[in-house]
Length: 261
Image (cartoon, rainbow, N blue to C red):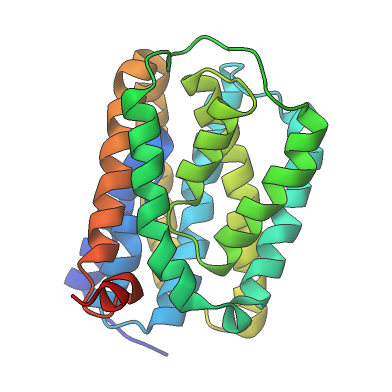
């Protein structure tokens, strides 16, 4: 069993609280928690796996908060949540076979694209617009792809769900956030189940961080529902750019290597 000092455990709990707060509004909680786990001495696979455990607490907290206020119809979304769960399981189980270098190279570009979309699009608010694809097509074509990605890799999955709900389903940004948290919870839970089966989850620290993230997510969801697009849009842009910057500043980033940096 991997033992850590009490001070380190408390710092991880604090990181999880902040991650839950941020993730409930704009996603990107893994930007905080995965590096924190790595710095605490956990291996890469164990960090991702343990992050899945604690993140299901945060996304569950957000789902409870948003559904209680009527921002997401749980009954109508259950089929797509189940599909996201299955895709998350598949992604986690297939993680070792995927071209990780390609994902690491293309992800910063995609995240910068998401940030630009929300920054330049003038009508990103809390009002629903005309949808571009049917709910059925959205469910069978978009949800499994992002859910699979979340299980296999993870960073930015919430931002991609948000983009899909706004750009394709026509949702206002608050409604998109609420529905993102449900599908994100499902794919996180799927990934966690797979990693738990493989025996790479550190339960004690994951549960401690989970409790802290649950509390942070409740606070973040409350702020998002109070302020709506005024707080969600700018934080989403900042989170996407921060995550892209972090990935690009890693010494072994394949994109930088390809470009000769």
